[in-house]
Image: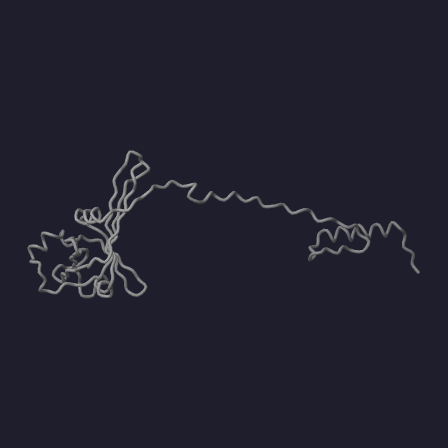
Length: 206
């Protein structure tokens, strides 16, 4: 039998240890027999930046208060324009337009073409929402004094024989806005929003 001296065993063990250090074993690592056991280096923890603060304690805010019926009516009488929100299925459509308020209802005048998207949404809407709002500058350049009124009710088109003359309609509404349309191809519709609810709010002065 061939004899193996101790120096050969040492050299084999060191070679095996060096080879095991370069090879990536699945965890846990099983080194070659006769090689010294190597301890895994501790993993460095990734330092993530701190999350930004959240919550009302970290933002500026302003208090609001509700408007009574008289204040709501006054805002509707003096405001000239607002946003009429229409709906069809799961889609919404907003129209910026002028209005006339006579105490019980809001009146709108729309210019439409027969195949317009506005007309399709208007005809599909039974209960609509109308919003008027305004802002005023304050002594604090970061803030605004604001108010808003939200009206909901049943929307319908008045028949051709409505009780308003052409002169009265022109006096109550601003000119029809035309965008990429031929006025000769437009139909005029007079709409009525029967008010079911009207609520308002405004910011409280500091």
